[in-house]
Image (cartoon, rainbow, N blue to C red):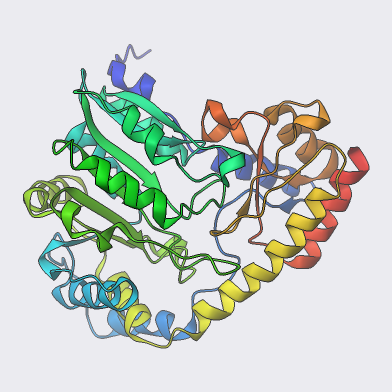
Length: 389
């Protein structure tokens, strides 16, 4: 009988509830239930063929060994070129660090700035890993409240008003998970201007959904503000844009002062990203982008379907998301809590969604629907939920 004594910090580590919902949905499906999964946040498309072939070719060509901890030089150069093309920003490839997905950048940024006695701001409702890792670091999580009436964009005035002498890092995410909210340029302008008075505060801009925008929305990259480049960490990657979630490939642009620190964290944590995936990522950035445009057009079509269908449900209202592939309807009028609705919709209707409270306490009264599923399945899922309501 073991008597293992684990570190106290593990009790502060949260989880990503979408994976728990996926596990429960998979169990019900294995029992013979027909489950429609609108819970998991990954494109329901295959990785484009030319990218897959590049990964296979890399393996056949013998790329089986370690790569530099910060990523292949040719891939970092391609990332810099892509960011210049998309955002008009000059990026030094030496500031690009390739990592296995988006989460390592979050983890490393929080570990770099978070410790007991410090504060880190994060969006709420927001991607649950932010709050989880902030607590794990010992820092105090300070929520940036995202409101439905603002289209789930942050208020620069509110963010700046929450800065104290203990604030070390502010995390923002646009287009956002779970809300699909897109923050307009004027709010980002105000935030950047206000940060001039707080030179000790770093910024992590999670722009993983930057290419998934609808009805004329504009993505404003924080890379476009030279005055904060010396304290900006930009997070982006391949998972969503190129349907490469399982390849585990992401990147970040780090300020000069942080590059050595994050490279050392990479060496201590994972050595490097697997070589073949990096060559696939290179093909994604330098090859044809038709598949990306087609995928976004399909998501846009589904967005229109799901928003209209949700707004037709009794007790439900849904604002129109400007980006990503999530709808975040308000279900207060149904009389159910977010978790109650999540569980009933799965158990009684066979539809997997994720409770808004899985994305922070301020997600009560909301559910996240991922429209990374077919239009036919989306319509069928909303019909089933309508039958319960």
